[in-house]
Image (cartoon, rainbow, N blue to C red):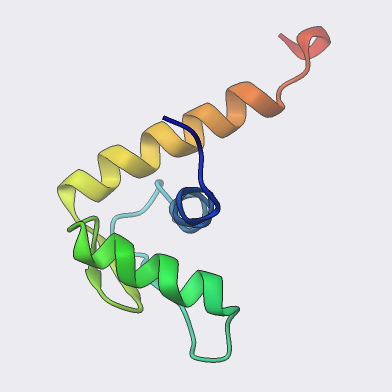
Length: 82
């Protein structure tokens, strides 16, 4: 399995969520990039967010966002900082 542009777009949306607050959602406006709009819709269809244009993370979505953000942190942290 490889990372497709669609999966990367979904990961980018998941990375935008503030995991420090369950009361803070996300809104993907109709003026956003078409790839972001489509990614949000796919995340909704996968039951990771509660609205087709963002909203709040579901329980499964929170797990996915935690993993996505953790992976991003690991991959972008330099060896010297570790």
